[in-house]
Amino acid sequence: MRAGVYKGNSLIQTEEIPTPNPGPNQIVVRVKYSAICGSDVHGWQYDAVAPGHVLGHEFYGEIHSIGSNVSKWKIGDRVTGGGEPPPELDRNLVRGPRFNFRTQGMTRVEIKAYAEYMLMEEWAALEVPNAVSDEEASLAEPISIAVHAVRKSNLKLGDTVLIIGAGPIGLFCIQTAKAAGASNVIVSELNDSRRTAAKAVGADHLINPDSENLDDRLMELTEGKGADIVFECAAAKPTIDQALDSATRNGQVVLVAIPWTPVSIMPVNWQAREIELITVFGAKPIDWRIGLELIRIGKINVSPLINEASFIQLDNLQEAFKTLSDPSTTDQIQMIVKL
Image 1 (cartoon, one colour):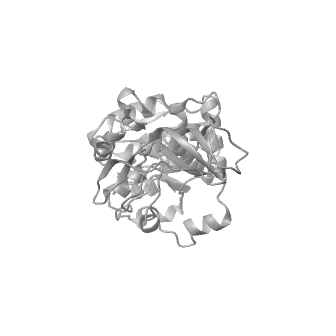
Image 2 (cartoon, rainbow, N blue to C red):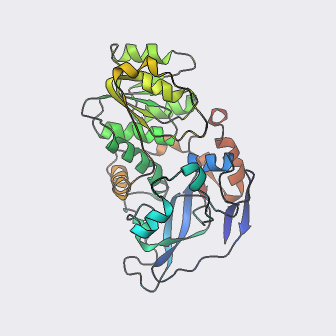
Image 3 (cartoon, helix red, strand yellow):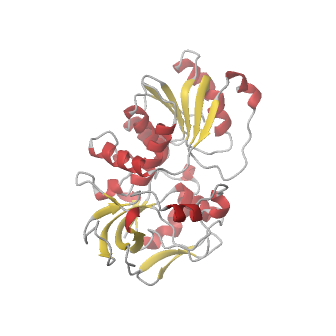
């Protein structure tokens, strides 16, 4: 089968590798779409991926073959990830109590979804509802991240929310925050295309921090109060400090994006407001299910994130990673490998 194999030194090459066969409790999925995640781009950018590893964890596919003990699935079933929690043994092996995503997260050689076929444990797959399209299902993972962030937050009905960064997860945070009862969602984003998409998915107010002072504009929009909840979805050098400074007294900041370089903060500016900072990472199976249901009932719209040019071939994966490593240089919000 063909796969995008990481070779080291920020290089992915398309190669022929063996097609997997399922063990007794495994399935093989024929991957149809595999969306490109920012964490994969960071791993590639900072050479934090084991050579031989095949990245890709935002995917949609159909079951191609099943192991002898598999009874839950049949060939042709539509699936994505996020099925069930891993068994305790597997969970401890993957993420121990001092798990470090940068140094441990991509250090094992695995064959994931930038490949024509992917081997999965039967518990790891999740059925895609008939009303959810193949393309929508390929974005179930970033949607689950946004769902997880909102569910872990203190968001209450009627709250004012600030979202810093309108990449894919920021755009899904807009929609999940609205679905959870936020009455006023304000978005700060430099990129014109992403601000346009933010408006299309329901943002109430847009701020361009390149031409407007974020703090001044936020105070205008909140009558000098600030945001009840801030979702930091940018991970740029100044944005964590901006997020903390934007929260109201006893407000909360949810760090959703993953910064890979040191950032600067000035606690004296906001510490007296007794702001809570929490972090989120990944999602739980319930978050995937909620995300798919929000798509099914029309609470999440993926259309503003994608267009015809969003879909690329496997041979163009290296170039796509180069493009996405500097989002300011492209109008593309989400790129998806079509296999």
